[in-house]
Image (cartoon, rainbow over all chains, first blue to last red):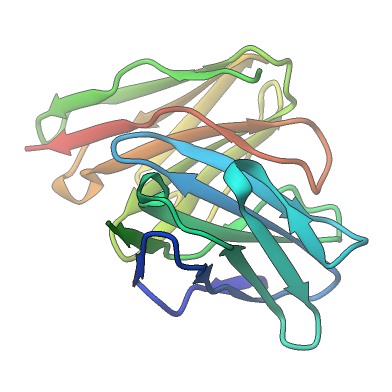
Length: 114
Length: 113
């Protein structure tokens, strides 16, 4: 069975500071990993994904994520936070055994303080 | 751009009513999914479909059924709505095969009284 943990329900960051939203995962085979963002009263928007290759993945809106196999982590990062980055962020994992289903984390609410 | 639309943004129903939530995608995707989103629980998969008339139970199928008569349309049915089904319902679609990105609709916020 696959699972995802987002250990922080809430992260507060000052505008202009770097931000990190944490995600750890558990799968049977090789993982493929996603980050999505949800703005108020909206659906989820795709940010980035890791399938294979370079451990640093770059995505939309200046976000990036680092895949770390030994620590089974896929943390989302941004060098300089904007107030508009305030939203709910979800990490999701799938496995490599031909399974189309993703398992989502419980979400982390990111608040950027002006 | 992929577009996934859901029939209603907000819906209020009474306990015991039969409720239909509809989802349409315009990118010829093979896979379609229904999730519910609850605070502190994240997204939980209710059902998914990998082809017309094909469906598979997700993690929380009890109290729900689905229908996929056409490739672009995936319906979620609450046979007899209950208050514990008050939630945000999200539809998603993806191309066939694993490792594909899922694209989400705007969601339907359902309140069951």
